[in-house]
Image (tube, rainbow, N blue to C red; front, side, top):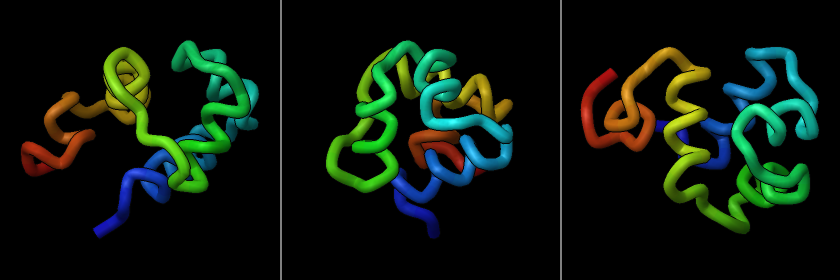
Length: 68
């Protein structure tokens, strides 16, 4: 199973976005996306919701609470 850092990077690359483009889509700074992808920081709140929407799944699925 992917950890959150791997999941975020996989989503961003699947969408063909740079860290800057992805950051703009989810409402955070580019440095924050880099921290997410390196596992140095975990997303909370609105960025998780926006990433779930970009992935086309529910927030519960994104967080691993519900099966995909």
